[in-house]
Length: 229
Image (cartoon, rainbow, N blue to C red):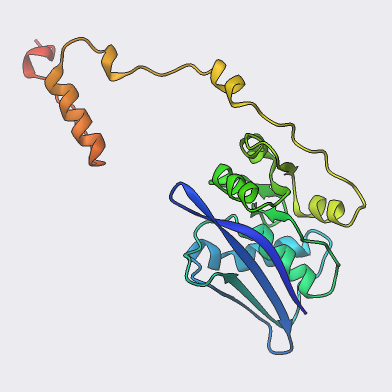
């Protein structure tokens, strides 16, 4: 059985819809991940395997193939852990879940807990533009995703909690929509370069270094260093 779960790949400031496909077939036990995955995605095999076992499910003792489509888009980061785990559980006929209109992102720990990931806002915007109605993210990322109006955001603690929701056993509570103006109202800006009087040469050096991602070493003149007796 081939299963399919939607996720997203963050490319710069934008996101690309990714279809996570899984297939469980006869053969020697092995998990293969294809579709231009980076090292973090390749390492997800061990995280996903242990997380599935510690969430009350069993991991297939046969050949597991995972494809991240489209194959020509680089897949970076650990947020593919959650959709890969869901796809494998479904492909092994342990549960039957409706994946239509849903997107999943999140890094799994070995005990099935979810850790926050980056790029949630871009993924939520992409989901809304594509007509996806629900997005499931780690609890720490829920408010960021909720900045996007018109999409249901569900915060997650772990994989077991997600499975319970999708199976209709223990429904999750939606994250309330977050208004950006409310967040910015309490924002306290840090000091700006314009607040520094004079020191034009030093400020120019700092700006050039920042633009080129260079390090800065500040040296004080000998006259400013106290002399020892």
